[in-house]
Length: 264
Ligand SMILES: [Mg+2]
Image 1 (cartoon, rainbow, N blue to C red):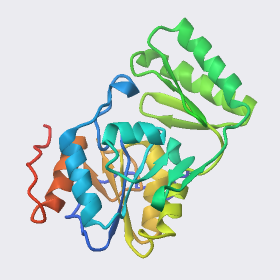
Image 2: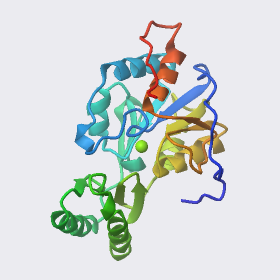
Image 3: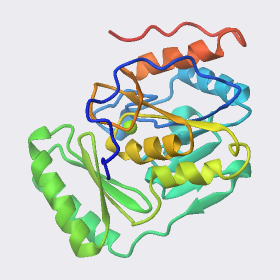
């Protein structure tokens, strides 16, 4: 990731109200729309969040996409299908308007790399391997002291098998080389219903920075969710509950929705 243009002090102020007329909204899932859990499958559907997203999808005339590290079917499970446009696996797969699917085929070195990660996970209780169609992730949230070893292994495997490393919050992932979240955002923005709108990307993690930069590069904006850190984002909200409250606020007046109280 090139941080040459990132703001080293990071964003501090809360964003202004969402403009439903001009915006194309891009949202990360884990750590952004949903709190991070110890293990990926523990993140489940939330009826209130689904209701807010369905209202936004309608108010934005479909100009809304989720850009996640998860596979698309996992995004659908958690968001109950409320978002039609999805970039999965950090951009390696995309579900476009009309349900058209685009995906990057898995790199042939991925299987050997996944097996090496599974060997380490067997030796260190608490590490979790998550296999995806074009990537494999090694989570160390339950074993934070293993972080340096996990990251070191990921970089060595990436070099051996010519894969890309995507580091995240308590996870190191090996990806098939291909589009990132920023590339996926640009693909969505090139076609209806997104084309001509102003992209706003909202995310929490390092993998979201490419999409922050892409949104700003297209004349749009970016919002960081979570504690302050160096970022391309201009605005910040402290946590997923604060984001849901901000999104619900944008829908209010168009359709009654219960107030979401931001977490302390
Ligand atoms: Mg995230």
